Length: 221
Ligand SMILES: NC(=O)c1ccc[n+]([C@@H]2O[C@H](COP(=O)([O-])OP(=O)(O)OC[C@H]3O[C@@H](n4cnc5c(N)ncnc54)[C@H](OP(=O)(O)O)[C@@H]3O)[C@@H](O)[C@H]2O)c1
Image (tube, rainbow, N blue to C red; front, side):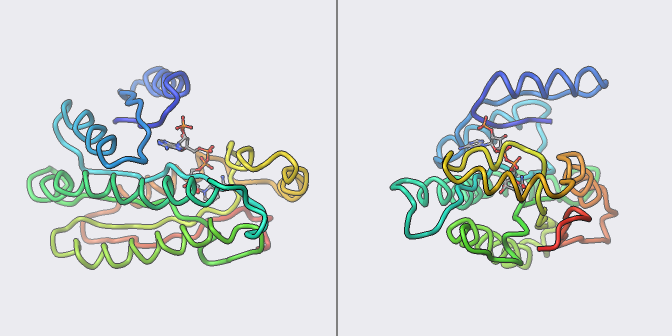
């Protein structure tokens, strides 16, 4: 397994956790917002053990706030990570996924894109995030149809509110309102999303779980 993100220390923590449970993982430090970086990350991933049969496009950012008030750079950051990052990684990984579906023991391969409940449900304060996640769903569905004859399954997961750092990237003056909303519900844990990924990618070859909307039992939006 390869884990890709920008912060080496955080990656090392996850690798240590995986290894302490008997697994193996390697950390690849990369900012996936350039085509070159995405291609290098895929190359490093396949250098050992030599096959790539599952990719999860998880990296994403939300910077909340009314569209008209957004400081310069916020829209671009969301589009760079949530859209261009996904395109670059997918473009770099697809030849490997196609090869794995042809030659690997599973005779199928998986690309899982992490969208958001911000795709089925657009709300004020997340307009550009909604734009990126609506886009990811459209991209995923079109790509699913393109790669289905090659047995590369493309899936999209739309998580509701998850207990992660995501909301902390929003400007400080807007965070109190977001925190109040978050505190009111028992959020999903990252493991809930991970289990959804596992369900998708361990499904038998004859099954394609193309879309899953998973949210907290408390979440009414
Ligand atoms: N949390 C939620 O409530 C929620 C709800 C719906 C959907 N989602 C989606 O779930 C996905 C994961 O978000 P999260 O909640 O886990 O957020 P998070 O806690 O902020 O984590 C984001 C992850 O993406 C990585 N990342 C960010 N920018 C990157 C870049 N330029 N290059 C490489 N890696 C990058 C981060 O690592 P580094 O910072 O070290 O690079 C981190 O591992 C996102 O696509 C998000 O839109 C989250």
